[in-house]
Picture (spheres, rainbow, N blue to C red):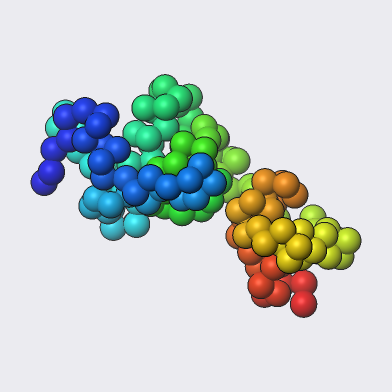
Length: 137
């Protein structure tokens, strides 16, 4: 089992890219697909430690805006409650006007679901399904 002793060891296991992209954990994973590592004899999820290094100790649970369990990009992580984790905006709140706007923004700008979700304030998976016409056909 690998041991990491400091912040530098941690970030060396992360594929750091642009601020908008996911920074994928390159180390071991939990059975549920989250990144994991051991620091000072304790196992911790990689996204939680990434948040701690940049933002300090969380007050609740660390969540991914991008919905990528291996992402360690601090810009994609936020301190949220369990209720927030289960109640992102959903497709029931979409209208045809919003669907047309989402598809227009994606087509004209070339933005993917994550960037459009930041503009429209819906979960990235909802935006992705609209753009790919999996919903609202």
